[in-house]
Length: 295
Image 1 (cartoon, rainbow, N blue to C red):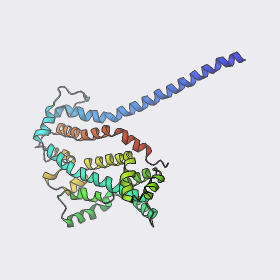
Image 2 (cartoon, rainbow, N blue to C red):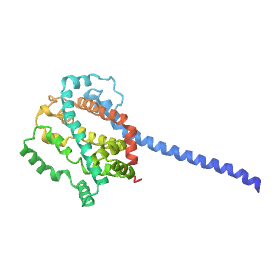
Image 3 (spheres, rainbow, N blue to C red):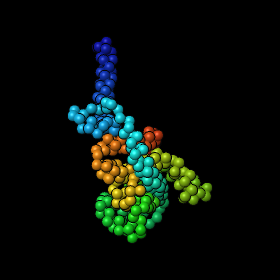
């Protein structure tokens, strides 16, 4: 009996190891297949940006262009106002992102650390605004900006984001701030530090992952925004990239098929997003994992 039990145990361990390897192989295959399917639209975008217009509609589709037309990118950069659209997009995106991250972090710090009457009630009311459709406030906000004389300028795309930063961002940062030990703040208060000093020298350095997440989300929103620039930027000189790509099918097309140019401009538009993600990938993933975990 002893001899048989000694023989069975190594076999069971080998079986457990094989099952674990099989589960890992299946998981990697499923994730790899899903990742490949998600990348197919990007591959098609890149492929179409290097084709002639008639080659994009060939059936069956050809993912490898033959021949490769690099002149599509040259036409976008030289013949089309791509650089002007990029400048306008940066003018609207960078200040709005800075204001959104700064004010959202300040509001989140007050909800997470400061004690004042009605704090939880105000925070609950703030969260309810997430369920408010954008279309509900579209007309009154537009009328307000028109009365201020801001239509046709970048102010409607920048100024509102310096007043709170959005309920979702506040909630995300508040949940992260709650994971920071209170003892650090108490020690700073004993040493005579004020709340703004604590926010700047303690909370902010410890919250880099969460701030990175909010920064990336905010940048993506403003960089890709189409509706707001379409409403408020009514002059060709102020168009952003999102409007410029759409207008390639109309006002900028000259009556010809510009699908290949739209694909090339779209590829150039997403390159900064890809670069930012890879540059901040570690902090971004860490922020997603840690946000909402109360220590």
